[in-house]
Image 1 (spheres, rainbow over the protein chains, first blue to last red):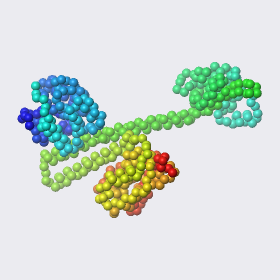
Image 2: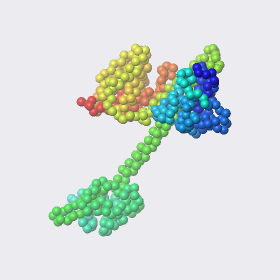
Image 3: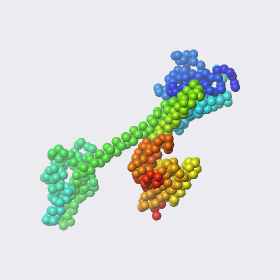
Image 4: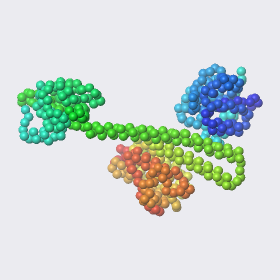
Length: 146
Length: 367
């Protein structure tokens, strides 16, 4: 483990229920983390750019991004993140119920760091979230904060 | 140039309109049917005036047909015209659709030239065709709606279902209980949710028979049935079922759908049994069709239910007794219908059931 500093994860998902389940799953992971939640793409970009009410928002170490959302969807958010030199190094995990080949291909084309199909049951979700957490905060080396 | 009593009789007895003109455009013959169809008698006007005298239009156009495109005018200039569609407005205002054939005429004895046009009223055919097209369009829209409905079922209906199931689990973690009644309720809720999920999936499969259809190609039924038996291996083993497969031909169809058809029928044969299931699958070639029989020694079906079992979501037994969604046979029926055939059952209480359906043989399996 690299540091005991609180790891911040940004969860972008419009479904209240899915947010609840993902939070629950994150709660069950071993690593300490704090999670910020936004419900659409516009809020996500405001959060990441520390605009408006997000002026004091932390820079997340990892983004969990849903694809299908109103107003600004995950594909647009992904595009904007990866075009922004300040944001593009934050790993983005696309976490969606979609299993469509076109969504997978499109996500990687837009430089998603990985695409994970969200399991439909809680048990599966807990396992997947645990693995995401383990991998990104236990295995990989992330760039250090500026 | 043409006259004999027999010829006159023939001319007046045919239902097609017939007009003959000489080279100058003067009408030499004009039969009764022509007058009836056009709603007007012969004219002495020149060919350039014909389209005005008998207001003639090209289909889907509001302006008069140019004189040089009229079939008889074309015939007079040596051209043969086949099945040309024209529309005329009769003096009484009614509009009729005509199919016209025209041909140049040469009388070798007198060296006179001319032309003939023969036409019939196809208004009824045109309107039937239009109605048919409208019906097909309406059907297409309704199929599209069904597909839309299916994707709604897939996504929007399943989502809240998943939430209920997950919250149930979280609820149990938040409020642990050892109360037997409470635990039994939880179990029932879970079972109901699973069933709902299965129903939605079944409905989705049903809707996708058309929308996910693949083009027909030769399908080896022996291979398809062998795969089905492999898929059903565990339930065959559980019930110690005896399955005999006769010689099966190559048919023309959608392989995955034909697989689903056999699998549904065989799994029903295994499921609806009260002793060791004995199942036989056979085929008999009848001309270009192949008749399949899937026979079992199971609980059978009373004749009064023989039609109902193919309807969607119809079940003859309580959910607890035989599980399933009540959609399997309606899927079978829809698959067979898409392949141009029909499916029937021969059965009675406690006498087993035989499901009979036909599929088209692939060319090379017809001897």
